[in-house]
Amino acid sequence: MTRIDGVAPSDGRLDVLVGLLVDGLSRSRASTIVKEGRVTVEGLVLAKPAQTVHRGARVSIDVPDAIPDRALPQDLPIRVVYEDPDVVVVDKEPGMVVHPGAGHADGTLVNALLHHVEDLSGIGGVERPGIVHRLDRGTSGLIVVAKNDAAHHGLADQFAAHTAGRTYLAITLVAPETNSGTITSELARSPRDRMKFASTPFGGGRHAVTHWRVLARGLDGVALIGCQLETGRTHQIRVHMSEAGWPLAGDDVYAKRRVRTPEWLAEVLPDERPMLHAFRLRFTHPRDGRACQFEAPVPDDFAAALAAAELVVPDPLPTIKG
Image 1 (cartoon, rainbow, N blue to C red):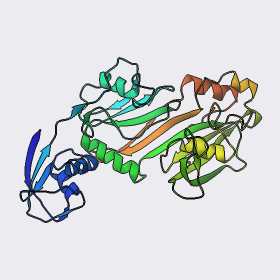
Image 2 (image 1 turned 60 degrees about the horizontal axis):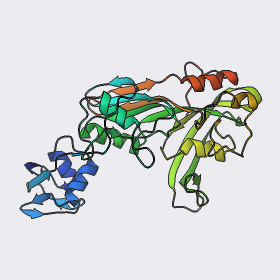
Image 3 (image 1 turned 180 degrees about the vertical axis):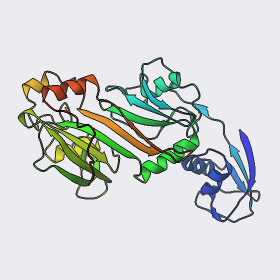
Image 4 (image 1 turned 135 degrees about the horizontal axis):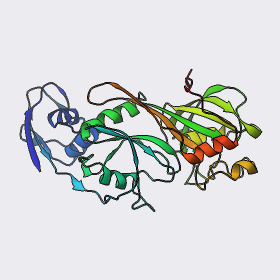
């Protein structure tokens, strides 16, 4: 436990003030500390994050030590594309789960990061890497991880504001009739299958926007589509492509029984692997504000599917949105 004493520099919300007084603390963690009754203002415990604190008020904050997470370090191969004291960018292989959860207690990207990155600090109050965004198990490509609370907070704000850019490559079993467009819907869990997501016309879902462009047209109507996410909802590209009539090759959840996969393509597709690759990642560095952009070459299984369909990734990749 660490005690921090300070003075409110201006009028404002209590959780914002806590974030200012505790170096490197994220907004969500500051809110949790307030709710736990660990903040006093002028000697009184205040437990509402939105409560207004006036300039000059004396504030004391008890910051709990980070507690161990159940994830343990594991010596698993990962490809680190970039690393500095604040962030690490990883090119995730298909089949690797990002974070431990039900059915995946270990063997995840988090387990690998705990082994490979020595200076990871507490994120959100636990000793684990700061996963800011995720990729599905079967999706390959780029993911950025925060190495401290300040970086986590800065990156999370960018993803929430849709200022961090993510461009994906998708191989679809059907080619769109037009060359580009935008899909907008509200995504929610499917009422028929709780493991799937679907667009809902009745409200209650989460706003989802996918910009897309046909990058190449191949054999038997198979296409390579570039997708730029404006939002990052679970299964967003897979759902949007499927509902538009262009399901992803290899996507047994959203393409099965919907469109027949040509035999020549089925022979090269891996099991449980939608042909989706996070090709490009763009964000503003949370410490110094510089523009960061990374690209990850397609993995071997994706390249094999491209070759079979006689598709080529354009170089350079054209603008997706607009």
